[in-house]
Image (cartoon, rainbow, N blue to C red; front, side, top):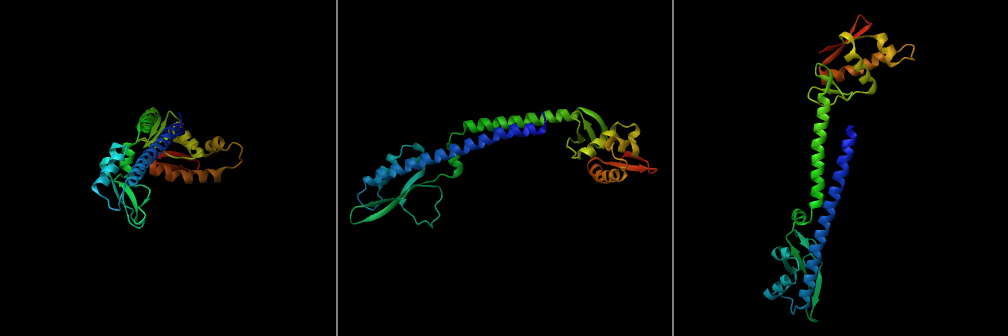
Length: 245
C-alpha cells in the first residue's frame, strides 16, 4: 500500500461523514423551525388582543409538537432586524383584529452545537470512527514498514519500501536522482564512489556529466546534513565519500 492510497481511503471516509453530519444538522434545524412556525400560526389564530398573556404562552407551548422546544422556546413580539437575537427565530407572523395590528415571532435558545447534538449523527459518527481507526492502522502499517531497515548510516535509514527516513521515522524528501545517488552510496564499499561510477550509472549517455554531477552533489549536501547528519566529501578530486557529519 502506498501512502497516497491511505489518504484516498481516509478522504472517502471523512468526506461523506462531514456531508451526512451537515445534512442531518440542517434537517433538525428545519424540523425545529417548522414546528415553531406551525405553533405560532395556531396560537395567533386564537389570539384576541396584542397582549401576550399567560394563556397565549400556554397555547403556544401546547401547540408545539417537539417536547424539547417547550423547554427552550418562547413567544414574543417581532424584533427589529438590527437587534441581535441568539438562537433559532421563526417567521414573523402578523395578527390583526381590525383595530389593532402586531407582528409576533417565537424564539428558541438553540446554538448550532446544541442543534447538532440533538440531530441524528449516528451514521456520521460511525464513518468518523472508521476514519480514526483507518488512520491508526495506516500509521502502524507505515511505521512497521519503515522499521524493516535495509541499511542505516548516521540518522538516515533506507527502509524496505525503498525510501529514506530519519531514525525517528520521518520521510526524507529527495528528488529521484538524489535518491538514486544515496542508494549507491549506501550500498558502496566504504560508502565511496568515483566520479566515473556515478556518471556512468546516472547519465550513461552523456559524454561529460561532471557539471551535472557537481550540481547534484551541491543540492544534495544541505538536505542530508540537516536531516540525517551526513556529509559528502570529495577526495583527491576523483572520489566522493559519504561520511557522518
